Amino acid sequence: MARLPYLNVEDLAESDQDILKRPINLHRALAHSTEGARAFGKVGSWIRFGSQLDPKLRELVILQVGWLAKSPYEWSHHVKIGKDFGLSDAEIEAVKQETSGKTSQLPELYRTALKAAREMAVDGGMAEKTYADLATELSHELMVDLVIVIAFYCGVVRLLASLGIDVEPSYQPHLDAHPLPE
Image (cartoon, rainbow, N blue to C red):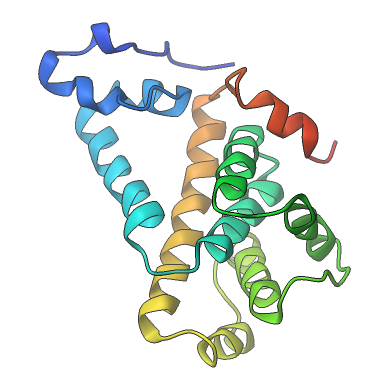
C-alpha cells in the first residue's frame, strides 16, 4: 500500500505536468519531489533509450534485480517491457532458473550478466571473475552501461518498497503470468 498519495496531472503546476506524461504509480508518487522525479526520469529514460546495451540483456538484468528483491512492481513492469523488447516467456522464466542455480538455455553472455546482477544485488558489487568474463564480450562503454543499469535498479526496488508503490491493474496480468516466489 502506497505511503504517499498518488498525484495526478491536475495536482501539479502546469510547468511540472510533463512529469506525469507516463502516469504510472511510481511517477505519481515521485511527483511529490518534482526535481527528484525529473532526475530519476532522465536516468531511466537514458537506460531505456540512450544506452547501447542490448535491450534483451538490459531487461533480463533488470528482471533479475526485481526477482531477487521480490518486487511485484518492478517485476511486473519489466516483464511487460521485456516482452515489448522481444523477450520470450522462456527467457523470462530463465531468470528464475538461473537464480535457483539451474542452467538455462540463455546465451552465455546473458547468463553471466544475470550472475553479475545477482552479485551486485546481494553482495553490493560484481566479483572480479564475473567482471572479467563480461569484459571479454562487452566494450568498456557497455560494461559501464551494464553496471549503471544494475545499480540503478537495485536502487529502484528499494525506492518502490520504501514508498509502498502498488502494481497498477493493467500490469497485474504480467505478474499473474510470471508470479514471484512466495
